[in-house]
Image (cartoon, rainbow, N blue to C red; front, top):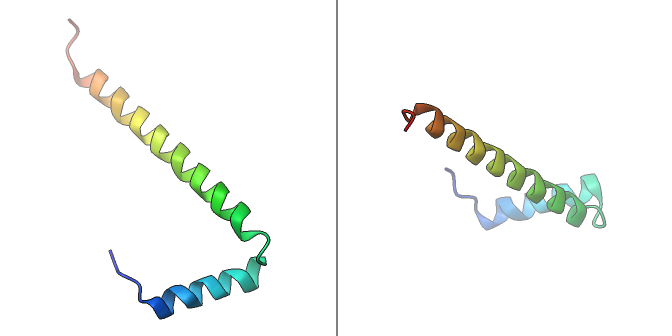
Amino acid sequence: MRNFSVTEIVLIILALVLLFGARRIPELARSLGRSLSEFKKGRQEGLDDEKSDKQPPA
């Protein structure tokens, strides 16, 4: 994974502010966090289902 320099991070934040406005950024960050959380939960459930399918019945 690539590490970003401080200059690149500042440019990304500036672009976000220009595109969405300062008021919408917290809302976008919250929705992104919720989406990632749901994705991780669904992925874990899929992995758990896969494990239980591979185990022989007791």
